[in-house]
Length: 241
Ligand code: ADE
Image (cartoon, rainbow, N blue to C red; front, side, top):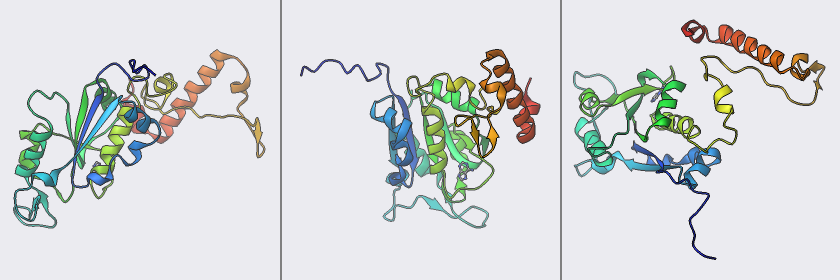
């Protein structure tokens, strides 16, 4: 066999993800299988995982210290974190830098779309009580939360960001149309789905969906999407223009 160009690989540069963590062994984890895993194998995106601890300077490889002013827990040191960031993302790297933590601005699909449209992302998985506040502004970090609950660290949140962004990269999703009709695409939750059997445990598929009338089907789906959004997500509903 001759070594010709690999026609299955994308010709563009991969979307670049870098994760800074104290637990590099957690990656790629779920990102190594299914849609994201296939895209990783095909070089649609790349994943670099770096251990923050490699930038510790003492014998015990310490990355944290007690909070100034007292109180519980430990705080990640600004100098160690800055060294890790500077090594991973030198001047000229224009990828956004996200710090995952429960104090962050809520992650939403609009931000995911922006990330997927850019060159990639640098993700910092926080642990302990938090990180020294000074490093956040000094290294231009945007704090992002994946929801109003507290995880034991930012690693799972970083995976959530990557999974959501990678599936939007060109060529990753089989059916490109699913991305335009899915939840949040237009500020609404997605309409309900049905498939065979036609009758299951005495319940029929809503007759409109089997009518063959595409305009009526579209109108039914729109009404259902609006009803679900109003009932379940009044916050999204009131934000709609
Ligand atoms: N780390 C701990 N809790 C988190 C959350 N809710 N979102 C993002 N990162 C976190």
